[in-house]
View (spheres, rainbow, N blue to C red):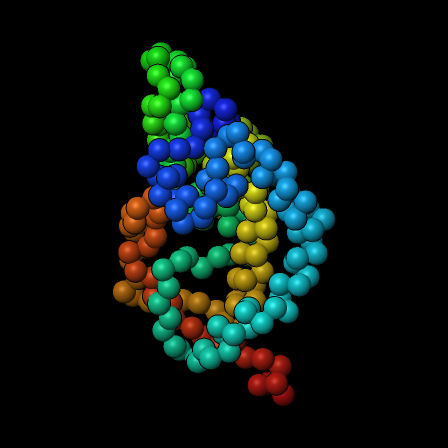
Length: 231
């Protein structure tokens, strides 16, 4: 369903509403226009470009502004999960708490799925959260285990097991950019501000439309001594 974007196109209510917000973008446009739009954007997300962006990100002003006003032992409330620096840990976080718990596709031509014939216009729902929680794909899926994504372990997982960024031709064009940005953001914060979960945190997932978020996420900030503090 996620691989064959010609037969299973975006559309119907979810994407129609999203199109009102994002216009006819690479995310929301139908198959007939998607590949042309993606080709125009692809050069900006090439691996060589991502490396260059990584050199710019730490110096960018928006990265310094949030932490500049933080104080030792301050409590911060966030609706997003803190993002670890290792690629394996970030991937595992996305596996357990995908930003979107569901996505939809619309059948564009008659097709048989799981023994059932579907007519054009039929809406199908795919859930990354459900796929990532399958015990036949992931050992102890409810356990947070970044080591499952180490190269020697991830090699045994079936192709398409991880769909945190989508899959096939509709896979998020900025997946590597997002991974780099997440790692650098966390490293920038953690070097100066170790974070501790406050007691009132409730990390159980809460469904808000197609997205998942923690019910409440409160973090305690602890200032790490700097060389000037210890001099």
